[in-house]
Length: 422
Image 1 (cartoon, rainbow, N blue to C red):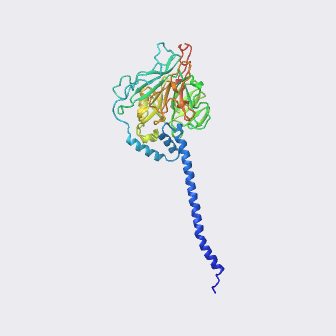
Image 2: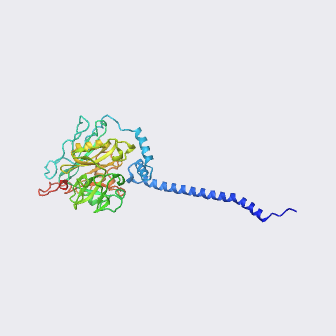
């Protein structure tokens, strides 16, 4: 007769048989949990990246949208490496000639006015070109955009950016503060927050006097400065930083915050971006063509990219510069040559440099169809500031008097320039 199995031994064997099942169960739970985390991550990644790649405010190109998303999500190093690899295969061309008719203004209908404009500023003299000898029409200012009280309020010209990259052409726009009133439009992405009194899309009412619109500065996390508008400090202003200041009378000034420009009851908007690049009419000391740590992350870490900048002349007129293949030193040199006493860099890289003038029919509002880019290859076209998806800040210049008027301004009309604010 077989010996009976003791209860203790039976429990021991039963316990040993159950252990592998418990271990396998735990492994399955861990595996399922890991798979679940991966699935959730991939779902988030797909949604987040997908939204970014379809978000036009992240840039005109898919590559720009991916770069913006990547830098916002901690993979800026990978993005920069990819850009560097691309740039190494596509460096800016040295030497050569610009395209035919490159220096003929691509304006949109304005014509020289036979009658005098006594209350307007005289147009600037011929712009010296960094690349000698000058080509026919290079540096010659020509009127563009709608007329203001029968006077041209914006002039454009074109020059080569330096003496080395002579196949490229950059554009300059000169704006008359006696005929134009400046405004700062703010976005939910840049500077963030809101709502704001002025934001894209430009309203039909505002478009009835709109003459020009153009890009502002860097994203605020990169601008090294602050932002003030709608009677509130959106981001604290930083002493010493380059500041575009707009006053109640619509004039604009540019200078170092706290010394050359400061808060007064007349200030309605302040947009800061890095440091001044021109002061007292000259490029500031310390500018370096290869320094991107101070002057912004550029495509592939290269110094030679699309850049834009803005300066103020002695008479209060504003000059915008934008175009390809520019270093920070070239940008400062151009603004100085254009007669600016103080100037600042605005946004950089292909997708963000954009300047548009408008020439609608008499009595009609500005719209993308009657807009013209300063340089035809500028990204964003003529429509971005009229789009609800545009969530970055930008500047506008609007007519102080009846746009496209058939008579001159009344002799009694007077306006002021930014000199009174200095």
